[in-house]
Image (cartoon, rainbow, N blue to C red; front, top):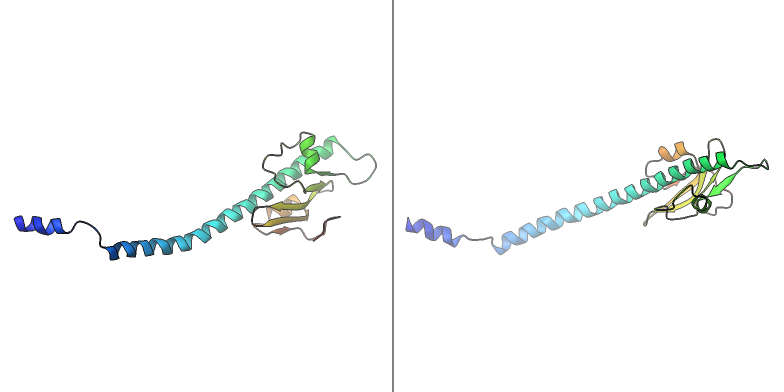
Length: 148
């Protein structure tokens, strides 16, 4: 009986080789997981900017109903005006370069920034935005005074 206690007391922990093997395995897992997670986060940011654009489109439509064009020209409105007039609170909208034109259906133009990427809206309707997935350019037509 004394002999088994001696053997058990000699096997207390992990060897240095075993610890290094565990660290190598964890490093490999981290090297694979971190880029994947950052891509998921960036795709979520792109989708969030597109959701913001949909909110801006809906809000601009309400603005156009309450402020119709009186001179026969197409009405348009930018994010700063929507914020100033109380249609948007401005929280989380980031860039104020987006503007909406009152066509049927309304479309949005401008850029939204996610940190890494720029989402470009080129006469993008709500339907175009909803079906664009994580594409960085939505729409095909150049907007008025927007430079590439």
